[in-house]
Length: 377
Image (tube, helix red, strand yellow):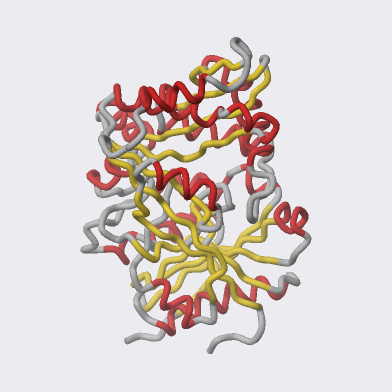
């Protein structure tokens, strides 16, 4: 084989080269699915995340052939929140070759060391609010929407490059008819909490997008403040997230809880439009036709992206209220399969709830970390 060459790419042309390096590595993989190239390129170029972060993009080639890629990401807001010196890596792709993986990792590690970081952690694409971890179990079907997918051998490549497992997260599968507790019983238990009239459960109102975004951000930051690796989202990031949900999702599957007029919780489901991306076999396609295709197609699968409750209101069993309303809406629209992701493996309460609902672990994701010592080669 020709020797591998890793170089940094910059500008719009470099972003295009970086994004285009992924698809050729999955030729022949029946479960490969990913969002549109232009969506990823836009986020790399101008996402509000970069207001408090910086990155470098590296592409590995053997002659003219793409052999892999990696992004080194310095999230200054994370390090300020957790008072550590961690540099992240993400968007990692690589041929099944240990030397190529080592070359990619080492160049990212060198970039991080030059900036004073003492550990490299990932994969994280782009932050903890996005695609998190490496798929290590559950390769039987394409990933659900906004979840990562990678080749089976990536874990071995990272461990061969000096990484060790840091955190496991799981995705639960649920199929219509397998829930042992009928929704009506769940709704009766939810209705017993709180005084009548205090709690209002309603769908997100996209006609008041700015107000709804503010409510979303307040609940999201309060609900996950104590979670592993969590960093509060900024107002600009929240706006971009809600706009993406509006683009790829269905507002009928997004429900908000208010207590005495104050935002207290929400549940967010997304139709699994990855099935559309998979069917279209990706390519450099504009977002508008894909949005139109999603609108015309009625998926029978959803991903439950977030169930968030402000800690001040958890005693009101708002999670029961929200899940009943959202799930009844989804089933009424023909949904028969759901994935709950992510769930921290160490979250005993949520894991217990999902198992009692009849859910089964369908996929497992792993975050790795490597101290920034000597290079691996």
